[in-house]
Length: 221
Image (cartoon, rainbow, N blue to C red; front, side, top):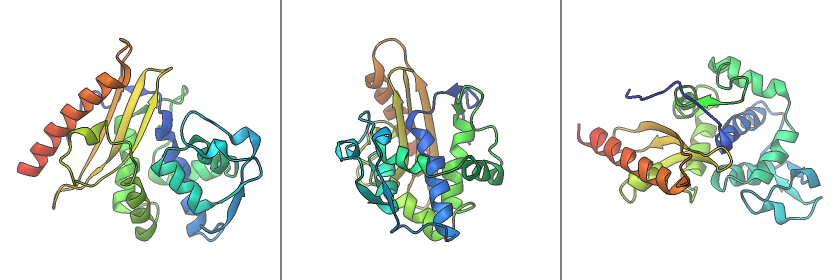
């Protein structure tokens, strides 16, 4: 375990979508929902900041599986809002209590790299969701097209199951996930706050350099 400023807090941006997906999949596991069940798009769900579902007409129906995949793969804000609207506070609290992550969010809703990394550790170890569902989510997370942060420093063909977050208003850029190095998978989380105007360009440079160093260290030692 190598860490630097692991307890610094950052605005989570789209990383906050992962607890929602955990809550949804737990309801599926417990038989309350099915992946084939449909949820309806409301006007208040439409969010153009990330994804394409906001272009659909209110009243459009999507299966829960479609919404999960849009949230994980394309980080779609509209699909995430549909799911959140159909969950309760208890659904979220159950996750945090089970995983001992009551301190994931502080009073400002900020997170740390140390605490957030436990979400992907739980997925990899299947400690909250069952093995089949954990692996299914990790597979979908490997299909995201957002590969310019940590993924930028990895060799072509290396599987990286991860979630990114970026919020220009807060000047934060984040990436977290499992790098499937042969026989030595590792978990990497990078959170950066950059306020000098260089935005995601500088963040991509930092994360590319860090992931390249991490990959070479783990793969060759």
